[in-house]
Length: 236
Image (cartoon, rainbow, N blue to C red; front, side, top):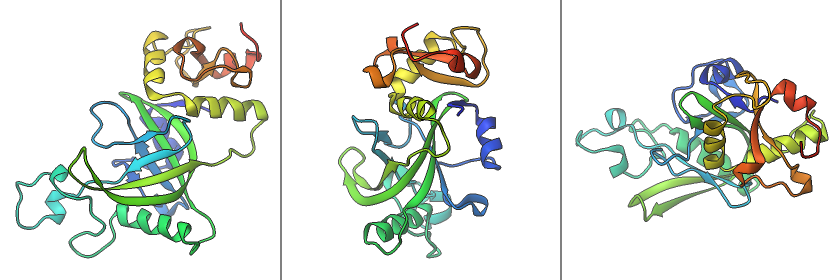
């Protein structure tokens, strides 16, 4: 599975040009697509817990041009995140809120399926894989001084992959973004073995099953798909 993607790679995978963070059933797909970033200049407070398992994803801000009638000087961050548009239709926030609530209160059997892509640096994205939307809160944020949606997502198991591929993917998913950013910069966006810039993966040096850390930059490197296959589960 390809771990590192360009924006154009994501467009090819999803079949449309993604222009916003939350995309609920785009092109009639049976799942939602989320874009996320945890960089300092990110407009939203997304992130994983310490285990790297639970994703907390913040909702979308109001579109002040479309949904604020009176005071056009208001900025999106001045207002609570909206459940409805001014026409009374559900926003993306509202659609995901209902999906999460329906699952939590057993009004639907299966959780909403969500595919997540995380921005690492300009035009560099990481495929975080598939998640289930299991819960939501609409809470007051002391940081932002307003009410925001907080969606809770848990990772799905990956199907149709080998145990080794499963371990590799879980290892990559647990790597904190700051580590990925530093590894990308250190390895200059190239495979450390051949210098290729295609089909790159964040690879562990000491296997996760043998105690390798996903939080130590010294244990993470960039490998292309070819050399990732060549690499055995031992310290090289």
